[in-house]
Structure formats: structure tokens, C-alpha cells
Image 1 (cartoon, rainbow over the protein chains, first blue to last red):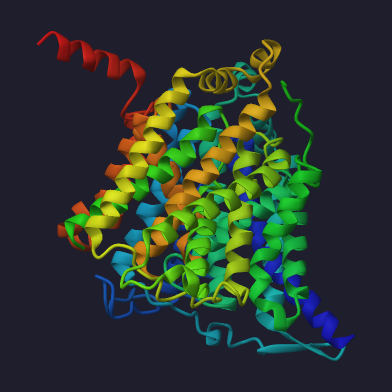
Image 2 (cartoon, one colour; image 1 turned 60 degrees about the vertical axis):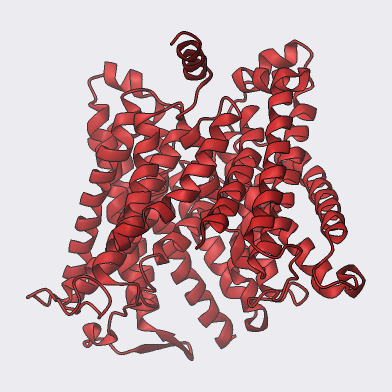
Length: 310
Length: 293
């Protein structure tokens, strides 16, 4: 049973990251009805910013080879600032890839392509500046904490527990804000019906920018956390997570906040339960679940069924 | 890369673009094209390396064996598309897109892990039916011409018009007695066959085949071909496929900046040309100016 507890915590921790990721998708999807394919790039940028802010030096391959920030912040501060940085990038993506199309009422397909283009630009910009090598955030940034906790006889990496706690905290804050504050209600109103929301005096443009900023923040924090618990495996590592996050998103139900969390945890746990001799199939698990769910329950686990015209 | 090799790659790009274009013409955003491309490639790789009878007695790989591979790949892809198409095509819009992304990813993970597909290493030493890139260029462009002709015919036919009607309004189309599920499935199957045929040529051309050939990147790049070129007339995806495939090569002089510029083209394309470069209206205007100089 010791073993099982370990698997459970690991699964929940990686599931929590997927959930953070999918939440970002969901926020943008709920206000615009489109998927932001540059989301994975924001995750990448969050990871790299965290690395730079704790004082990490750039490797030998990028244009900035050998450069490092004059500061060396504690991890938590670096993580928060990296989230803010990714939020700013999110705002930039909205202004360049989404707003021109929105003002023209373009069809959803075009957003998909333009946001993807923005993602390609960002990821390659990171690669140009910092090289393609992988970076890792040294565990010594958390020197005050022991590397592993003993819990009921199981050895659990502290990092995994922290990941879970941070993710839970962010999800709780987001839910509180969405359900309890004026701003959150306004965001929901725009998601429900942008035109009516505008008639009621809500600045829907501002709400859309807010959704992008929040979504960038969540992705950036998730990137920093994964950088700490695993490593930053080159600029493209956000894209792989982005794809899986997409699966998580649909699994839980597009536009549903609790759905994104549930989907993330299910995928994380399912992947952790794959026995090690079949670990090659791990990356397929999320998509296999997703495919089955789509065929049986297209609106996702917690999504509302959409009235179909046909 | 030699100019002829680039010509071959551009032909592949245009063919894959047409494969994405056909379902899109009836309003279905399917990103399954790289999956069928990979299936076609594996059919060619497995048949030509594991079945000695196909290699013949001569020095080069016989063209009749290549033709056989094309037929087998087309049949396999059509069968898979028929079986998967029914349930998958019941999904709409973004759900269909994501389900097909999931299919491509599942296929990729399977190919990466199964023994018969060569695992992560893939299959090496695929025999060459042509001596150089010239032969491949000829074969690719003949196939491209055939598929273009098919699409042009299709657009003038009842089936093509039914596809356009479903794209504009599926409910209205069904009220007019168009069997929308069958029409969508037909487009999906033709699209799968085109991708698989392309895969056969690509496997021989590249000499090696592995699971990395088709993935999410490929799904999106092929979609970019269509959106960039235009999705209302077959000439659009062909142009998009040719230009965007050639772009990274043409941009080679700018070095490390080329992928950033490539991203900028994909980013700005939909914003500056929301209908794609080629629309029926623009074509008509062009014909008019050509007629009256």
C-alpha cells in the first residue's frame, strides 16, 4: 500500500499541473469560444523566466550565451514574477493574434492559425536567445525544505507536495474570484453572452484581456513548477504539455473550471498508474481517454451539452 | 537540399494540403491527415523491406511494386477512414478537430512502441524505385496533377456542390435531401487516401520511416497550408502547400531567424488575408484582367 500512496501523490501532482494548464485554456475559451494555441509557449516562457530570475545563467548555444540576471531571487518570488511575465506575454498575444480578428468577427479557424503562429514565433525566439539545451532549476533553491517527506511509510518528494499545494491554492483563488467578485461575475457574463454583457455596461474587451492575462499567469506558474520538479527540456517542452492540456480540457468539458481540474487529475492519475514496463505508452493514455470520452460524451465530463442546430 | 528535392517536398506539401482541404470543404475541420500519411508510409516501408518478392531481380526497385504499394496503402487508409469516420464525423467543429488530433497522437505513440513498426528507430533502407530526385519529382507532380484534376472535377459535380452546401448550412442541406453523413464520410475517405498515397512516395523518397513523420506539428502545418492559400477552391491549398513548404528553404539565408519569420507568416496570414490568398472572386477578377489587357 506504501507504493500506491506514492503513485497517488505523483499522479495528483502531475495532474495538478495539467489542471493549471487546462484552466488557462478554459478561461480564454469561455470568453472567446476559441482555443489559444500559443498557450504552450506561455508555459515555456514561465519556465525560462523562473530559471533566469533565480539567477540561472544562459547556456552556450543562445545569442545571450553566458548572460545572467544581476539578481538571484528566492524561488517563490521568481515563480510569481515569471507568472506576471507570462501574463504580459499573454496580453501581447491577445493584442497581436486575437484582437485584429475579433474586430472583424473572423471565423474561429483563423484564431487557431494566428495563435499558433504567435506560439511558433515565441518558442523560436526563446530558442534563438537561450539555445535549445535543457535547463534545470536546482533543488537547492528550496534548501530550507527536506528533499523528501515520509508519509505513512512512503517517501514522497517535497517538490511534488509543493506542486500540489500551489496548484490547489491557485484553483481555489480562481474559483473564489470567479464566483464571489464583481470582476469574476463580469467575466462569466461575457462568457455567457458578450453582446448582452456590453449592454449591461461591462467592458468586454477588458474582460477578454483579463482572461488572457490570467491564463498566461497560470501557464507561466505551471511552467516554473514543472521546471522545478522535472526540468525545462528545451523551448518546445511547453508544446507537448499544451497538447496534453488540450486533451484534459476537452475531457473535463470545454469552458468548465471544475471540469478542467477533474480532467487534469484523471489524466495525471491514469498516467501514474501505467506500469513501468509499459511506460512508453504513457503519452497515449490521455488521448485514448479523450477519444473515448468524445465518442461517448462529446460535451466532456462536466460540460453542458450544447444544443445542436442539426 | 537540391532544387529537385525541394520540388518533391513542395509537391508533398500541396498533396497534404488537398487532403486537409477536402473535409474542410464540407465544413469539417479534420486534422487526421498526418495520421493517414504515416499509415501510407508504413505500408510502403513494411512491404518494400520485409517482402523480398517485391524487390524483383533488377538493380532498382520495380515500379510495379511501387504501384502495388500505392494500391495497398489506398485500400488500408480507406478501410481505416471508413471505420473511424462514422463515429468521429458525428462530432462538430473544435471537437472533431481535437478528436482527430487525439487519433494522430494515439497512432504516434503506438508506432513508437510496437515492435513491427521498428519502434523509435523506425524502418531503414527503404529501396529506391527512382535513381535520383528527378524521378520522385515526376511521380509526385503526376500524382498532384491527378488529385488536382479530381478536385476540380469534384467541384463541378453533384458531390462537390453537396459538400459546399453542407459547409454553408448543414441543416438546410439535409432538408434539400442531401445525405450529409454520407457526403462527409466520402470526403473523409478521399482525404485519407490522398494522404496515404503521399506517405508511400515520401517513405521511398526519405529512404527511412519512423513515428516522428506525423504528429501535432504536421497537423498544424498542413492546416496552415490551407488557411494560408484559401479553402474555397482547390487552387488555394495547392498554392499554400507549395509556398509554405518552400518558405523555410527560401528563408535559409536569414539563418536562425527563419523559424521566427515562418511563425510570423502563419500569424499574419489569417489577419491580412482572412479568406486565404486565393478566392474564387480574386480568380475571376484575375481572369478578367487577363482577357482584357
